[in-house]
Image 1 (cartoon, rainbow over the protein chains, first blue to last red):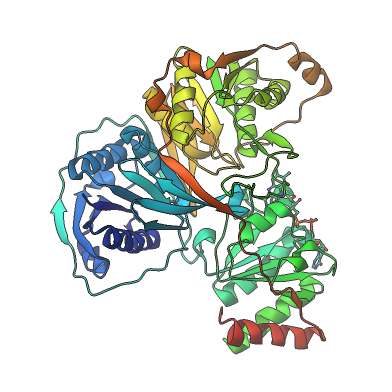
Image 2: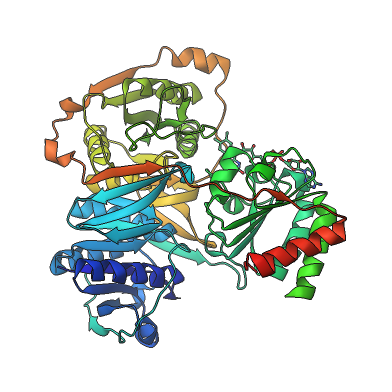
Length: 319
Length: 258
Ligand SMILES: Cc1cc2nc3c(=O)[nH]c(=O)nc-3n(C[C@H](O)[C@H](O)[C@H](O)COP(=O)(O)OP(=O)(O)OC[C@H]3O[C@@H](n4cnc5c(N)ncnc54)[C@H](O)[C@@H]3O)c2cc1C
């Protein structure tokens, strides 16, 4: 019996890998079983030390140049094989774009239920997890009764807590034979310095109130001052002012930053769903009766083109 | 070529939700139901393949009898026929069970391509189509924003955080669609009329011959709650310079989020 955490990498281990490991350690402790980890990628070598303090007994490393990039065909069998071999009781992955796909396929292979995108999990005579439904309009507490119990954890929610535990032992796994059906032709990664929305500590979003794409430079300056990621309402996306990957909301991304600044956004229920997990919400809107002022912590009634540049200036001076 | 689209009936995204008296479910009475928005992109993709490649488009959904309404919407967009796996007689289904039902219904359809929305906006489970692909033994790619077909090979862009993978997969294969791949069309009046005559085949879940334990739930809801929503709603007053200074002060000194 053991808990297995899947460590996601994209070149380097991702932050969500450490978050999942931290949560998995707490779960394994409560269950009184060891925690193991699985790494699939090109090479873990120089990152092993970063796995100290997470209570990982052994990290199984399947390292090969051919595994550098996620491949459903190659990865699923590796995870399935190890889970079966270890008889893992709990499997915890990350609810990232690729992590969700991996977990779904593995759960199907193992023929067990899986709860994706949980905001927490705990051990209480079995695994329980808190799962947002309807983009977070409802929170559900679920008990998993399959073996293994499988969850994926939402990035940027769990904080990484380290303890005194040592660097885990590495167990090298052989590269399995796989026939690839899906062929990776190209990978494009974010430009350096661009903060990913779902992982950002601060998000600045713009809506129809920008009046046109010419508003983004104004918001981007605020983003730069804050190290923030740029979000958008659906109205801004559907107007063709910005790529859909920036959309926040029920049919966009659910973000969980410490600070969310909504500029020229009215606060429709679908938008609220995406920003709800934010710790503090600030609204800048020229209409004092806009819904956003009922669902924010701090509001400024005014023209964003006057307020935002002043705010950027003030932040530059203060921080 | 045959394209099967998996769709789901969900509450309209504008719905205000309440937890039912049992504390474990959502009150559904009085809610408006629609096709899950991401599924509309899958239907649109299929209809475009009908227009470009003469594909036959079949819409498949598992759900209560009312699901026929959203199947009808897909037919009005241009799909050829529909299949409803009626789950009214089944107990609570989890994704594992739903995927088994859909895979069983797909088994003898001979689909060259299966498409579905990247997630349904009710349970946000993001796994049923991937499970179906696994059960059918066909390759898949999730969250695609581009699809191109040449011969029996599909070339797709798959979204990842801050970037994308470009993949090639041989058909038969399954894909889940993300916003950005296309703009779902609105049904025209003539098409709405035509849809009324199109066939929706109803398959009671029991007819699919699945063992009870392959549909049983391994995840049970213990409680549902509405998230605590206590926001300060403090509107900061003063002239612009004063307000901005005060905002930065509270965020920095009081809330400590800077
Ligand atoms: C199926 C479905 C799914 C949806 N999913 C999403 C989703 O995921 N995300 C999402 O955001 N929406 C979603 N929506 C759309 C949602 O209902 C709203 O239409 C949308 O959020 C409105 O965007 P907005 O606030 O930018 O625009 P508006 O509602 O038009 O608001 C613009 C605001 O800007 C203010 N303003 C104008 N000029 C200025 C200025 N110079 N300075 C300051 N303020 C100004 C106005 O007072 C107004 O409050 C969805 C809708 C449907 C039907």
